[in-house]
Length: 589
Ligand SMILES: Cc1ncc(C[n+]2csc(CCOP(=O)(O)OP(=O)(O)O)c2C)c(N)n1
Ligand SMILES: [Mg+2]
Image 1 (tube, rainbow, N blue to C red):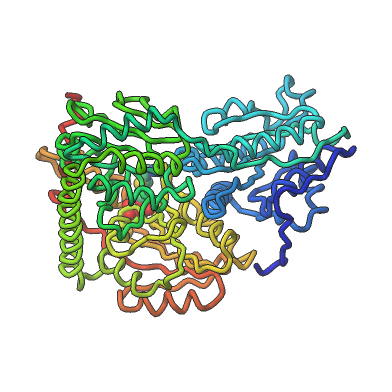
Image 2 (image 1 turned 135 degrees about the vertical axis):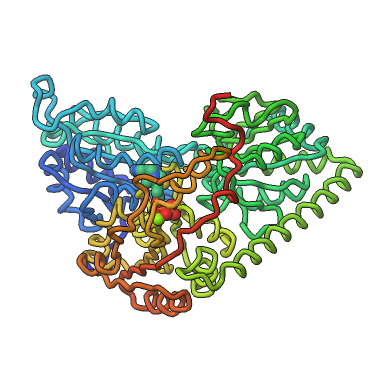
């Protein structure tokens, strides 16, 4: 990166017991944990930490002009490195600013350690400036939250924070450091957390029971979620199991690669919050649903009946006991490391499946492969239909991207309604090659693209971001310019919050009513992203014609600088084609 070349301290540095201040102990612990970047925005309560950080030149403080940018960077960085990232914000207000983006990390289980300075313990009962009980607030959004009041606790609590964040099911952790804990001295044992102690194998009886149910299933269906990709080796095992039982695989969230997306059994994602009647029919037709590393049917809008009514039996493989049997009964649960559990399940299954089970699975495989081909053909037909539209259709846009993106690219996808075209046109086969928005809170992608590049400086990194979502954290442009982080953002500038317009149309399913789509567009004052980029010190290019996209993208990637491409897209949709959210749910029946 432009400013300073960094040396990485590496993990496992054990400094031993020594007398030092709390501020120094915090920095020594970061060194020991192998932290390279602090994503943050400072304030006065953080000054002791920043003062000590000056003596650790191998740890770079990366300033963001809004905390949501830092939270996005920390999310993208952690998901590529698969290690907890580290943030430091300014007391109650800075932490609060980070929450909207950090919410996604919490829902998706990104390992990260969020920290902040806090008022001295001696002042806390006297209503000090900027004070609030941050631990109470952050408990809601983290796996664990705590406050360090004395310097003696700094090493143990930092170690605990990294351990808790990295232990599956992974997730964010919060620690505040009261002023007193930074400035006094104590004897400190500087030693990092250890990881990889948690690849726990499941109970063989649970595996046996799941294998028995799976081998007898006639119409199995698989659901996979984000915890699959968090378990190294698991995506390939999902593919093996799908082939073994001849099941189609649907992703509850494909924000990471849970099996290669070009795999013949991968059927795409489905929207859990707006359960479409096709998917409800699919669930009802299945006699067994195998859920792996996922929440089972979270919804944002209630439907009149549960999505699984009646026969389908649920078999759940997960590292999260909380998500198992949380809302629906299961016929078999397998709790343990996901890759290890799938390995055992696949092995036991091959011993249990009879010749006729295997033949039936082979038949199902053929049907699944045909369905995948039909899906491909219907996407290609859609591309052809919308090829010459002006402004550019999302489908044409996605095909132009596929042609221009280099094979080793890492993609940050926060493209909202463009996402289904992207997933139709591009294949994401290598785990880690896709980092997508999850959790539903806007603003993650601008920063996450930067975090991914810091984690993988030798790979080209492209962020594909909705125009509405880009505006939540547009200050990321400044961070890119200031540190010379050479990413390319492609803004899907369709001039509106298109997804909300679509959802309004869904909401009005079956009703004779024209919507005015209140508050959902930028038509009167279009957003000029190229001009915004320029004002932050980043070159921005407006692309109106689809054939210009490829050459501009290639040029931007070769420039070695941060770049923004403002791609003007069509926001038309056919209300009837997208309707069909299951049930007349708004009537509460
Ligand atoms: C922090 C936050 N504020 C508001 C929303 C509500 N919301 C959901 S999607 C959306 C619009 C997204 O627009 P854009 O990024 O332009 O994507 P498009 O729908 O046009 O593809 C909004 C405002 C949200 N999810 N999160
Ligand atoms: Mg938009």
